[in-house]
Length: 288
Image (cartoon, rainbow, N blue to C red; front, side, top):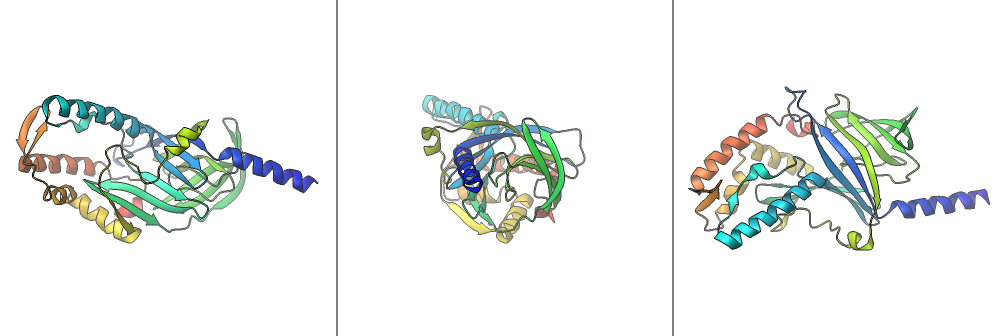
């Protein structure tokens, strides 16, 4: 009787844990030479029965607002005024984990190229006896080495989901907090919300960007690493390829029309400056 009661409670809790939104504060140090520059943005983990979806709420809200401004400008003047500095948020990826196997995909883009990258690496956790109350949850400690870093996680069996922020999963409860050994990347659970049926319908694993067009380029992690490093060394590589298929010869930047060659030259300069300060990415093993 007790076993049946426990099973019923477990199934009830698991059912309630589905169709939920978990908000995490993501804090990170993009430049390892400037530890004082700590960035922070709100991220979202949506969990529905078929999959989970992790993305930046900061980026989504900023891009949605920016898109409305661009649409008004195009209607009013017929031109697109590019002001990339107005877009907020740095975490411009989406992580999809398909249930029940937790098949994990990184969904991202390079220039105009959309990528869907399968990551088949298994996360091997070491569960430790230490326990700690974080917020309202009793949590337990676990450690792993992944993505070129050592991580410490705190999970709670009070929410029986083997889920967590980013690609992390596989513990016997939701990850409440996780950070790397150097404390340069950390996620902390901030809020939990039950999703309405309408909200669940709008969560689409194939629609991951506000500015979305074209098909995805599917690849494994080895191919992605090469692609990533090639585009890091040549940040205009992807956008040049897309422009060859269009007739655009001018673009408006900060209200000033400029030819595409000059735009690309200036873009490459700015991108390389940004890349030089983006040397502490979450998956550090991509750079090695």
